[in-house]
Length: 138
Figure 1: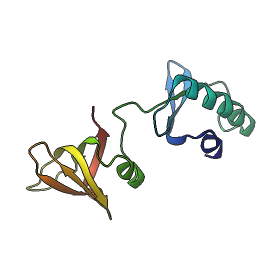
Figure 2: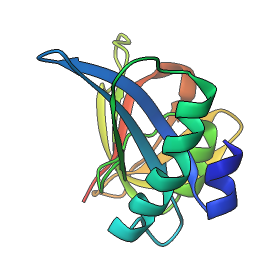
Figure 3: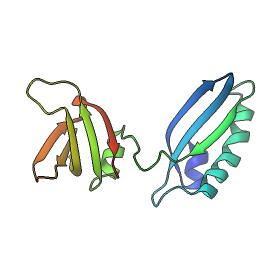
Figure 4: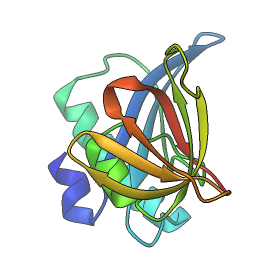
């Protein structure tokens, strides 16, 4: 999204949530070094009029801009690359004879394989195709 890139942010996730008749468009952004409240306000001020002008969400809605948080989801290859060296929790699809929940530091990401070094020192290679969910951990 060019408007975000021009402000130094990248789009992590966008979703429309309806609760009690209230429509909320949630936009999650990321920036190396973190996302501040002032940064969220800047993005909201730049993004709001653009969304209204484009008519992408007709009718009344609320715009929320925030960071995905400290325990953000990892979804893309770039997410895994950026968070090499970070502690993660990975859930895999059920595979006979294989560990389903893996926690540790991302030691490496190459090709389509994330290598996680667990606390006891064991390195576990996890193919992206086997991952059903992943989060950064505190």
